[in-house]
Image (cartoon, rainbow, N blue to C red; front, side, top):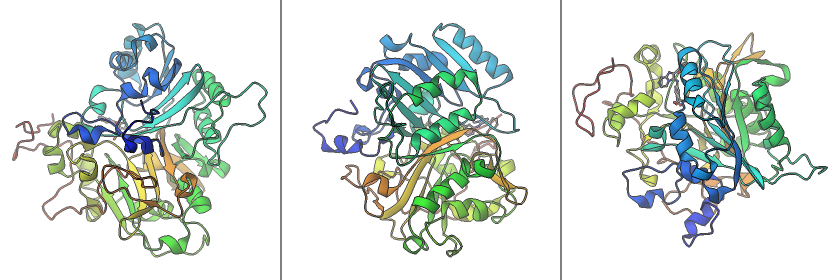
Length: 457
Ligand SMILES: O=C(O)c1ccc(Nc2c(-c3ccccc3O)nc3cnccn23)cc1C(=O)O
């Protein structure tokens, strides 16, 4: 259905970026025209599936199997997760019911890391696709939340002796292979081989991956925020063009980032996201930073009510150590996509013009605002320490035939070059009364959409 040149011209243009939001139940269906459900991604119209691999954090295995068309439910399925102890045992047990399902446990050798990466590798009889998303493989992540999905073009199989390595201008194939080989898992070897055998020259996005480790030398810029810095240094907008343009970060969880902004957020991390091409040394005035994170009332009045907050795990213990963050916070507002009440589990980052009509680049990723995901420099900045597995994609205008920047799509139906930013720009600051959502404290003053209070145990 996604490749059908439908009557509605909007649908046609939507293929342009391959970037979609997930369908939301309970809103006007006009806002779901260009949205996808997991069943659409796995449908027979996308290709005749031979095998698939599902990378994720949370799995409901019986539910996941049900999302495949019945004729594909017995095809080989590899599940890649990072769970240990009881949860690993639960997954092993659940998988026993399906002879076609194999499990692969990612090594979590650094404390507090998670296997956050949410990716599907789909092998068809005539090619393969890569899908990168922010949604867990559980029902509620695909029901009433704002989630992002990037669906690759169909990558054709390479002929046996075909000379071209089948890569794109964005080194998509090389970077995806580098990411997978970093797992050092025999169970992934067959999928690394499948990728090698396909022509991915039509991929226009850059891979933004994170892999646990202390990355130094050549590997220092292979992952995390230094990979983004490297791409922007080489292919980003020029310093003069984006001087003073705000950096916008939007996410559903926040890690501990030290007692003040200069520890990591407004130094190392913002340094990377505000990188521009050219005179490396020239320090542009610090880019304004706008962080979009749901308020307590955004959650309370959402379609799901307070339970939406179970997927927005910001702890009071972390929050009270970093009140400085508050000045950067903006509300979740997505009237443009009819999703102001569909709480964000999507994570996106962008560079916005002061009049918020243009963006210099856009990234959608599993990475929240945390050192664990993006990495933190150590040992006199000689190595980048990352705790978690993450993956996302970066869109640069010139890779999509746009002049200098993307025009921001400011209404439902998108014209050719406009980029469908999933929320309203400019972002709306917190009011004096607004508080960030914290998931581990009770809220007994006001009921949510369903008339309930929030009493975490
Ligand atoms: O994407 C997201 O925003 C997201 C954020 C955090 C997250 N981690 C997480 C963890 C955890 C376990 C071990 C080490 C670190 C941890 O943070 N424990 C819980 C419990 N409930 C929900 C999330 N939890 C998972 C996701 C995700 O949905 O993948």
